[in-house]
Image 1 (cartoon, one colour):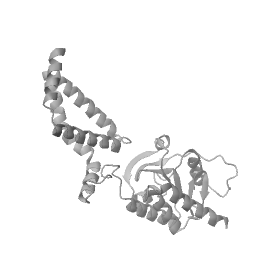
Image 2 (image 1 turned 30 degrees about the horizontal axis):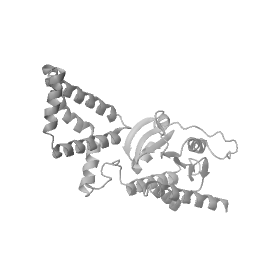
Image 3 (image 1 turned 90 degrees about the horizontal axis):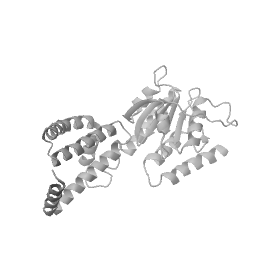
Image 4 (image 1 turned 135 degrees about the vertical axis):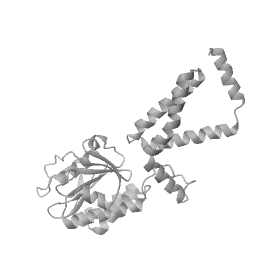
Length: 284
């Protein structure tokens, strides 16, 4: 196909362009953009990039009338729709759940498709309290603005929904994932058995073990919040900004989790209030 013919074809197509076509393109572009945001931290992102390349090549083969290649790619893409549905089954299910709850037109339908915040708080709170009661050591890092990709790569990828039984099973003694930290990102368990940098602060009490030093260590290199359950005493602590708050009770733990997951707009101030309140209580 010559350059002049290509220009004429494009011009002819533009002359028939309707408002409905523009809306169609914008909606599809929005859906693709949200899907890329949803999967950018997962292995499915690489699959999407591969599918995108196939689409581009298929369109170019149609434009330049490369018949055999065009037929082959179109056949692959048609069959690939079923593959995509299978690969993205969890994401599609969560999206349909949001639609079923009447959030079709709400702004958060495709925002992150996270599990419900109150459910995350409930499951985390239950897991930590049970682990503390049984004196099972645990280290749970909640990622915030600073990404912890290097730390996540040291562990075993989970990509699981937060649930009390799953967390308890991960930290069960004498199991493969018992040692190390669990990393939470966007309300999901991303990885387990991750290695954290240990704090080099020589003023830390010798009563504190490796888990507490690891919690302080990761809090010095990120804005994460780390919950620690002592294996020796069952005491619950949390670390933030290189500071450790110990003897966290049931209510304080729930307040902490709610400040992290329930109200994103107030996260900074509410978390600071929890942290300050516990610091004041420890100082009394």
